[in-house]
Image: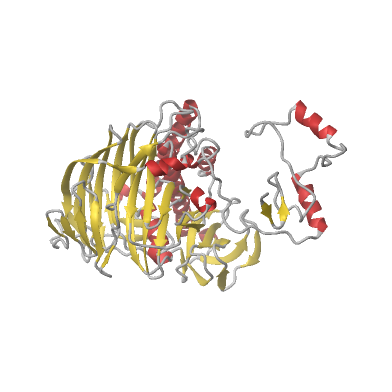
Length: 598
């Protein structure tokens, strides 16, 4: 007999010695169905039946109150309550998931721009125009819509709604920013950044003190890549462009299948993946076993729940896939080096990808178009590295979670596919690698291998599977030092939130908000729900450590109060904000009404 806490059991009830009460939630199905006649009759008979536990009706609140009245010390479970099921919902119906991530990003930017314009002009910050868009997004995050496990009609309706949301948010952003009169860029993030900016300029230009390069993207569109531009938090940065190409030389040197970048010595395999990657800062080889960016695929036929699940045996069947069809250098200049490749995968699917090396960053970006025809197939991009750590970090909302990279027991073995948002990181104390993405959610990490799930070909309940053409980006980021905000979290945010071309009119050039602790992330700026000359700032600690930080506000911001998440103030904001690990704080910040200013 299995024993837990010294008490034998056969009915899956743990900790029997703690309390004689148990709460049973009943009803028909998982969609909110009510109790059936048989259930009600069973409860009536069990109210006082010899040899059986006595049953009574109660609300969840009353049950918790009765437990509290017992006055016992209850055991605590610390760690992730990991559902050992439905791992395929992290990957299936990828366009629905991409629209979700893009909508979150667009609405974040739209609310920020609304507040910046209001503070700059002294007008009330009104979020009424954003609320219908948020409501549409929230509806489309409902079970089973976002997981991609709906019937075809629901999937089609979700795509119609979220596509319309994105178009409307884009129109409103353009109306406020006027990118066609571009005089610079707006940084939508709460920290300073210097990553490469891509501008909608299709002719060669240069900028004093910066490096520029005209780049042709997949599909033929041209953009101007600008490196070295320092952008302050939540503010507009002017940018002056002059006619003519930048005459700076390329820092990249290629010979055959070898490439030397400012940060790495790279060798490509005959199949187009990266068979050697030596970090020039440390001299460390990062490839172990399979080349970096190896496509892995396997038959994906779950024992049940085709659209919901990925079974453990699918991981055992993963094999290198991808036949290189073409490879060419698409860009080589002072800002970036771009290799354009095409592979066939999973029999008839096609991957078209630009592999981008940056002059100012060790980040290697994979800008991807997937023409997917896979049925009952799972496709991953694997990065088999020499980094070894007992746990990896995956981002979740307002923080990250550590999960084992080992498979020592059944609990660890169950985590063969897990959820991540913008990054998955594998770090030793003084070195690490992260895999960033802009719209993927499923990842597996075992040993030194990080494998991002790109596509799943489930055929039920939607018999069309996931056939279609999809675009997405992911990136490989080696970093010196262990996991921290500067090495991983900030680059992941910068990868997700692009700088926004803008005219600059009506936007402040002074940062709206500054914090002096790197691990405190000013995540959201939005209008107050009750309007007025105030806005909401939401911050969180992003490393899982303690933080003490000062808050600096833009001119015109006159005061701040601590609020709950319902935006109800409860205390003045102190001179220094103290954060516990992953703590979230919400502030209500007032600003000057220009009409009342003498």
